[in-house]
Image 1 (cartoon, rainbow, N blue to C red):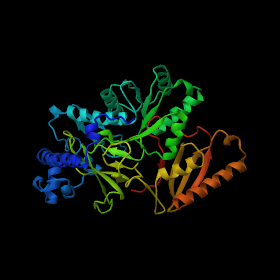
Image 2 (image 1 turned 135 degrees about the horizontal axis):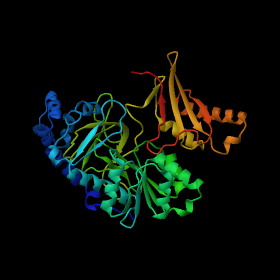
Image 3 (image 1 turned 120 degrees about the horizontal axis):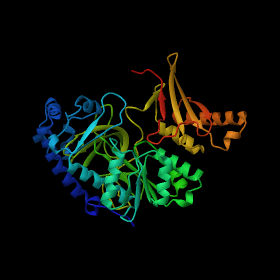
Image 4 (image 1 turned 90 degrees about the vertical axis):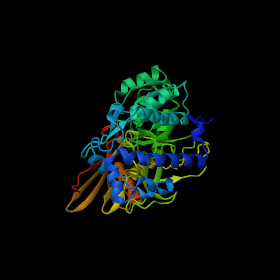
Length: 433
């Protein structure tokens, strides 16, 4: 039986959703124009005023915001409320330039918690569940978001944060956690540790809510099998609130975007032109209900597809596909766009675990791509000849997927550092800037 946290919203008619969006967009544009001088200046430069925005149809008249704008406006330039009414900040774990700092009023946090509650109930959660939140806490949005959502549903919440795997497993067994929330790479690591310790029959998990990094359908199936759960995707970004912007339902055919709070567009990343539903392009979000950090037309750089096909779960909100890569930090190797998810798909299809690193270098002005892959324990005892043959097999499979040659090096099991947060998949040694 499908469960909803707010059925009257999650299953609202398309007419009702559009009415909410039209009303809230007009109000939000006025709020931003009046209280965010940085964005007002961008509107003035584009020759648009709040009076020009009467409905969602007018959205494309507004200017885009990018991560560069967030850095330029750091720290307070995009804050839409007096600091006396802001109660929290969250921040991205960005490694370049200034960090992105997002502000929240208590109302913003309440709405964010509701979005995460919807995700937990879509994964089958009720107030009878024990939710182990193993995303990082602190400035990172993963822990606080799912923590708040779990409270809203009424679950017993274990605020574990990431790391300390022994304690994670002990609490999971002793307290009977039924839902685990963490990054997919950490879920895979937990599964590996649980099975190594022979504790598979001591855990009571039924579902996992995984996000914050790219993962493939093959990795989903591996985690589901290893932990005996159903694995659900969740999507979000600090700039827009955090996890819970979109979430998977029982159908697992894309993530429902909470359209009463966010308008999603797909644009051509090169021209900025809005593309029709079903087109692959860059995802853009407009926040309809955020008070303290109300971003309009924020370019996520995530590449995906939107679909409005009727969903078997009964929810009526538009669905986004799993991000298919990034328009900014995808790898361009020898002029070819390379997404780590493509490489992961090949490895998992060939029976390898999702423990790998992609190393890109430039030698004599020519790009070199190497993929280091951990062998399975069974393979480790193979002869050098057999291992070389396995490497050649992967080289051919990667060439078929990517269209370019990648050197493959099979390394010993457990020799690639495990991640307790976001896995470091790519080492780019090229000096591209």
